[in-house]
Length: 171
Image (cartoon, rainbow, N blue to C red):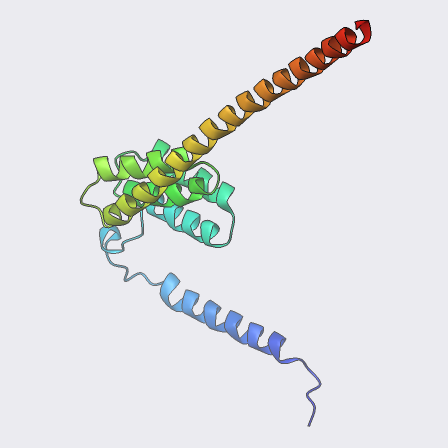
């Protein structure tokens, strides 16, 4: 038998009624505990969680901004090591040096954090990548010098050929 009404609106209405009932039952209750007993994550922790979600969704720029916001606005917060750890891979995709710096700061300022061991591994990998980049840049520079030198030698060969041709004609 075919349903005349799609199932999703019914489920949506049911969830809305349930949420409203819970809100009325618990939201308007005057028997709340003290505010300190109800732990809400601090702002820095919420920002890191949001940045982690953004990074997981492929929104690296937005995640990087939130991690940096935590570092700027909450420099003494316990969430700073998590922000530094998240900032490393967020930067690592484009800027190995900045990622290396974030991991170095994490390892030096928060050696006992749960992310320190992973940060050391990232440091080693990024250190190797930075060394390879420097080697590649040096080789490219040497290649450019060699190409310029070869172009100069080709020009000299052409000049010598023309001189030689001129001497041959005179004989």
